[in-house]
Image 1 (cartoon, rainbow, N blue to C red):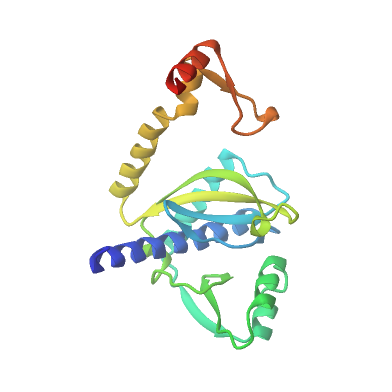
Image 2: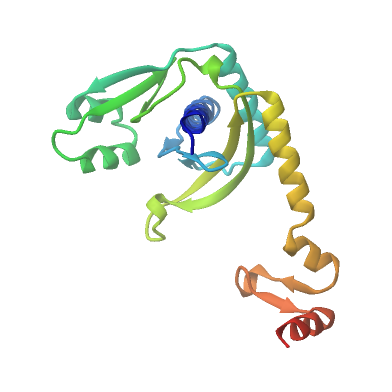
Length: 221
């Protein structure tokens, strides 16, 4: 990747990670008592995992998105602060997942906290200068997740979103996802009476219909 490409990728990751912080802030504003975990940027967006007694619905995503827009409009600066381990434990005394992460940091680690408004998070950064610099964003879906990917740990709710520097870039991305959805083999297979799936028998297990079986055998032959 070129130097320009690396810079653009870093800018996109920074925007998305900052959007994850704003989403967590919005969730805490709307659903007090929610426990926060981690919120990284990923290949096509970002997510944040939450421990909440409330089961997030599509309507909740709309409300969270509106609250995020309000936080963005406030143009709150992202402020970085280095803190001691003791100070970090004090700041996140009511956040058990953050305390676990703090306790696992090696001795001598630089511990940083990022703040915007009243929201603060244990984070290495980087972030955009202020919430107003986040650009265009969209919350996509809610999924289940285990803390640290281990099924023996607490089950969390993961909210996925995506963000781009401009509204046009976001619209193009959403249009691409819509087109890809039309070509999803799971959707087409069901519509063409080739196969069906039943979650109770196992995720990803294909139950072949007669037409689908004939096509499959022909391909294998």
